Length: 304
Image 1 (tube, one colour):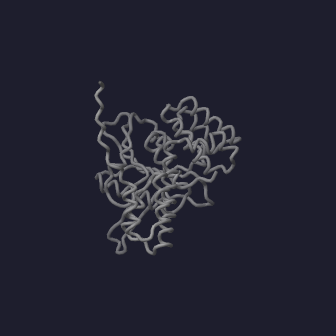
Image 2: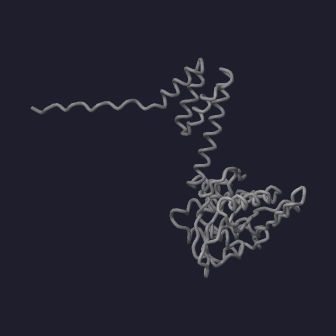
Image 3: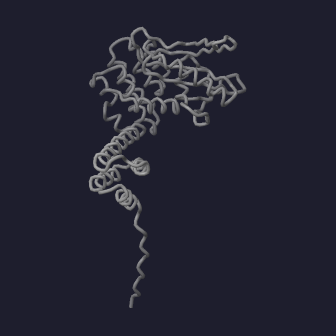
């Protein structure tokens, strides 16, 4: 099963929000007493980091901030992104956070840099930064499964198997079956399949974790699939309107983009196929989206 980027992004963000402590343990942080995801509190514009965690550690009176970036491949832009993340959080909080990059897959000899040293053209300013990089293909899967934490499973499936991959994947499935919370069970299986698809391209291996069915049954991934379907269908409708009626006015495109549900998209597609002009299409679209007025209740007849 080929892993689609939107699914991977949604899976990564879900893991950061629900099992952020497991990600930090990948980098050797073992004294966590409590943690919470606080990415939503970063209000600076431009691209946000994949995750921002506020972590309380044993023996410390204050919390530490950790920025996390998860990369499929060791591309150059990953180092540039983590540097932006660190400075973004510093500008927002006035505190320099810790930085962690987790890279899932090897790509030739490319490596994600773990530091940067920038100098201004005239040499008046200098900026140095460093962060921790974890290359999962170098981490033994057995080490990740040892704590018996189901939150480690998605990372273990892309780690170094140290033997037959089907054995490791079965251990991952068994751990989820034994330890996953009921409200996280389906998401953990689906996310594990998405991550395993990055390393393995064999259905027989992905089926150990539940395969396509596990992805379909994962609530977080269902929302991704629904959003992808809506975007594709909206584009089809807009192309149909453009072919039939010419350039699509901004207000018409905005109206089409607001429709997300399958029934509404099918109805909009029929209206687009029949429309003679944009004003009429927009009028019919608005009418179709407006619920009919409630009918007053009929008076009851008095029984004789």
